Length: 405
Image (cartoon, rainbow, N blue to C red; front, side, top):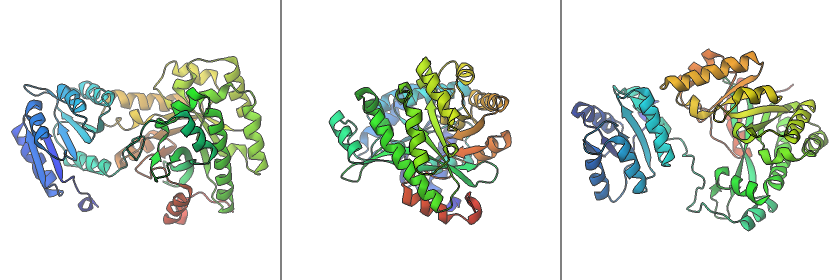
């Protein structure tokens, strides 16, 4: 319910429109903010930030302002190591707002929204909803750098395990599949997300043993799904480095057959940027995986090059639209065009269409109406450890999960 969604205690609003400052301040005050700071330009805002002992829990920032404009302000925020949520609000053309959002992300700022004026309470409410979602940082502790030795030990000791994010049927909202996402559990309980260790695994030659470890655990969990009579597909991310191993298709097929499972339950997701350079071995590996009845998904579609070429060359069964386009589609004409073009292309090629990064009911409604088949995102659930996933599934009604028998 809207009344249950509270704003951060401290908010900084940076805009040279006095009326907007009043409206925004009133909104956040009504939502529970105690300290609301306002600034008419970036220079004043920086002075406010320098005086605060605790940084604000949200910064709402205009782009076109005197003295220091919003683009300069974003750069200077990075220099001050501000890592709290930032929302852009501007009357500039959507293309400029989108560029500002990309710039902020390049600065590694935590951009939660890029909004067009006039200010709309419903959009501010969506911003507050996003603030309640877990931030996609690499590590839940202060550490972000790991050695090959540490990673090797984590793999051998079973400290890197799959967590699962539900995928739902766009029409019914029923859980139809999950995606397995690697998580490194540290001794202090901290959780390391894959961005912090996958590159190290690929560069150090550890990606293959890591992949094998994750696959074995996913297959064990798939057997547990089967015992619970949950008829769920499982998607797994596969590094392009694994695709140069001609033995890989037989290895995974053997493990699946040994567990008395159907290969068609499993979809292997390959990031599009990883297959820009095609070679004979990777083509053979992907073709054999399809012949063995594994599904193949082109992940993060639209973020690399030669998209149509990839779809024509490789035997994909699924196209996954990247969160960057999905989350911006309703506010960015170019992002919307990319989403709709991807959907039309996938439909023509007979591919299952999955959209990730679904965060609002409006996203769901739009994607459902346009014919996307499966949805994934924080609107439904973040990635969960296996036991918590089971609790989540049971918390939904019996009609909300695919069951056998």
